[in-house]
Image (cartoon, rainbow, N blue to C red; front, side, top):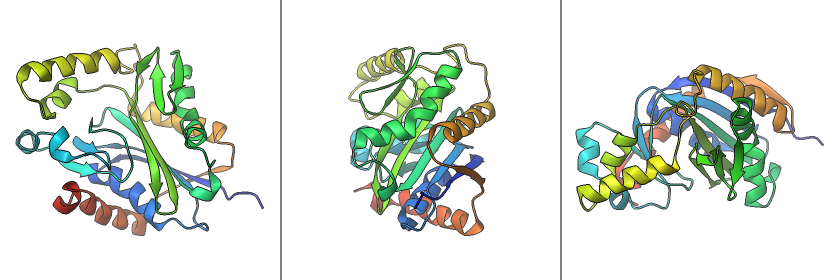
Length: 250
C-alpha cells in the first residue's frame, strides 16, 4: 500500500513560540495513521533556541538575554544554540518513523535535498556535507537539527537570508570580551548568508522555492494544506512548555 500524501503547510510569519511549538506538537501527536507534514515558516520576532542536550547556562548568558528581551526555548531535537529572526526561512519535516529510512544519514539526505536544490537554483554551489551540514559555496548557510520525538522523525533547518552575528555573539556565555570577539569573528568566517552571496530574494520567494522543490524532490505526492485551529492551539500550549523554566533548566 503506498504511503499517504505529505501535507505541505506554508505558514508564513508566525509568533516566535509557534515556530517551535507547532512542529513539536505535531510530532508528539504523530501516529502511523497521521499524515507526514512539512512546515515552512519564519518568526515575526527574534528569539533564541537551544538544542535538547545543551546546558542553557553553559551556552547563553541569561542576564544579557533578559536585558535584550530575547525569549529562549529548548527544542526536543539536537543541534546548537542559535539566534532566530525574520531573516530566516524555516523548513520543518515531521514524518512517522516507519516512513523514513532507518539510517540517519539517509533521513537527512531525504529531508535536506530540497534546500540544497534551492541553493543551486540561486546559482550557488549547494551541497550536503558531513551528514547534515547544508553549505553554499563551501560556507555554512543553515542550521540543522534532527531526532526522534515520540513516533515521529523530525528534521528542522533554515536558510539564512541574513544573520545578526553581533547579537548572537553578545548573548553567548563568554569568559571575557576578547573571547567573545574571537568567537564572533570565527562565526563570520564559517557561516555566511544568502545576502552576502548576492541573493536579493525575499523570504516569501525563498519559501515558494522551497515549497516547489520539496514537491519535486521528496519522492511522494505532496498536497498543500493549512494548520487547523486545534493544531494552532496545541502549538501555543507546546511553546509554553518549551520555554518553561523547568524545561529550560534540564
